[in-house]
Length: 109
Image (cartoon, rainbow, N blue to C red; front, top):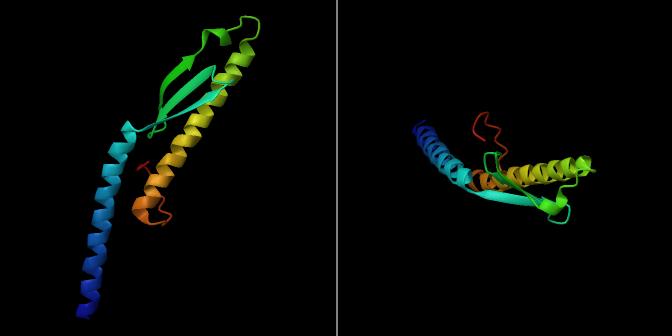
């Protein structure tokens, strides 16, 4: 009976440490960014670990009043790729803490 209590206390400590590590990671990821380009570098999107667009750079040569649709497509492609990279970065960092456990914790990331 007492052995089970010791195991439970050990498990609770591990969970608490994981929670602390995850909170620290969340703060760090807010500062980390990833970038993606499209159109051969004509459009660059930078996204942080919270999946927020931090900056968008458009080369003036990409702006063709006769072909606005292409510019829209390049922006969309760059932003979507940057968001994908950001999600991958978060998943990779979370995997380091959880040891591969698939924890779906709503509101954390």
